[in-house]
Length: 180
Image (cartoon, rainbow, N blue to C red; front, side, top):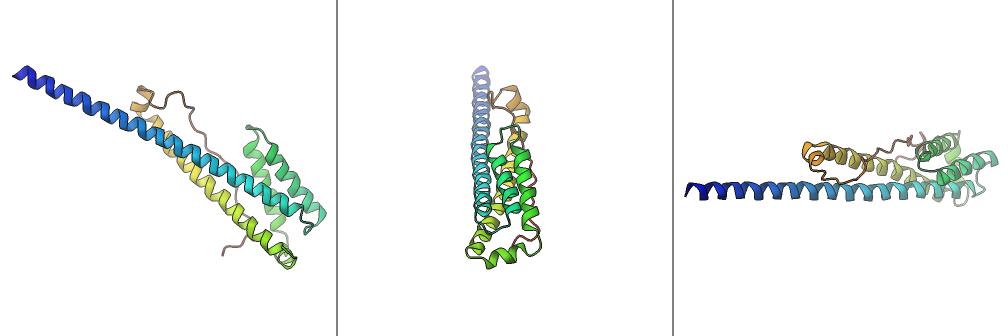
């Protein structure tokens, strides 16, 4: 009777431990899926911002120098490799701030035909980059914390997945960006 009880208790403990480990592995897997989706969302937001900046640069609503600076920065961000990606996106943010924060930039562009629509698109694209990057970096932080736990490290619950990296860029919006 006593040995049967011990075997039963050990069996229950083994089953509960297996269920817990399976739950942790599933949770870590869902975190990686969330991380991938957040990364795709961030890349889409960055691509949209580059497209809007290129559209603005080619609109003939800006002076040639500003158009050239914006187009060059957007092009560099588009063709940048993985090592230069963050730096190129930061350069685009700085070029965008330099252009949009010029004196009366928003007023002049708003008065031009189609200018108001471009400004609205630009404001939306810039805001989406800020939010997407925050969401992505939050997902990275949560995933890294889960991967650092002793159970995940010991049992290699993350498999051979690389440790996720934060995406650090200068994404501060222009000071004159509409806050409506």
